[in-house]
Amino acid sequence: MTQRVILATGNESKVKEIRAIFDDFALELLPQTAFGLESPEETGRTFVENALQKAVFAATQLGVSAIADDSGIAVDALNGRPGVWSARYAGQGATDDQNVDRLLYELRHVPDEKRTACFHCAAVFVHSGDDKRAVIAEAIWRGKILRERRGIGGFGYDPVFYDVGSMKTGAEMSREEKNIVSHRGKAFKRLRDLMEDATVWI
Image (cartoon, rainbow, N blue to C red; front, side, top):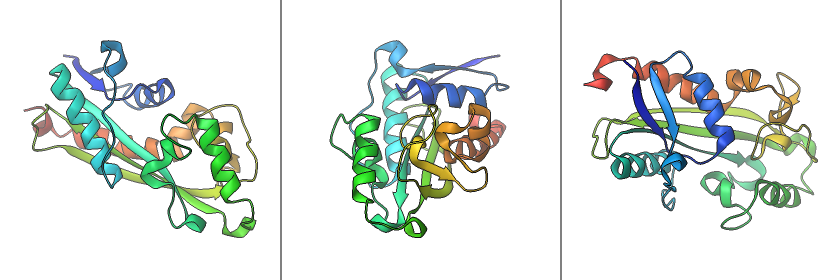
């Protein structure tokens, strides 16, 4: 039997990535925007806290199980910034391009060998708004920040995030390639594996 689960996001690119990972799972994954629901203000100090806020809010408002994630990029030369503020690094309501522009500007004098960074992702599942047994999975993706954009795919900081192993940016990868190596792909695969435990559905 297929179970309806809300994806607590309005990001269409993220929805496609997550749906691909759960493709063989008996879930009907629906974005919260299909119900006119927007995410709450993110006030957490960690990716896990923010992901839980979004999942609990969606589950409470819509009365069904919910999945959410919070992710961002931490740049070593910037002491881990932008971190949990990645989506609003250039200000509240900033576009992806504005956030990338700010990042490239702040790193303009940083030499190539010191432009290391990693993406973080925390993915969570809650059975209901008052679920005390939230399923949590985390993962990271290491790479470096280029000096200019490359590629037309992906979203967020993908065009300037270079994966050394594949020698591609996140924006140059296919969705399948990215889901294998990315922080979000690995975190949601771990979440999927944890959810296969039957106790999650009791």
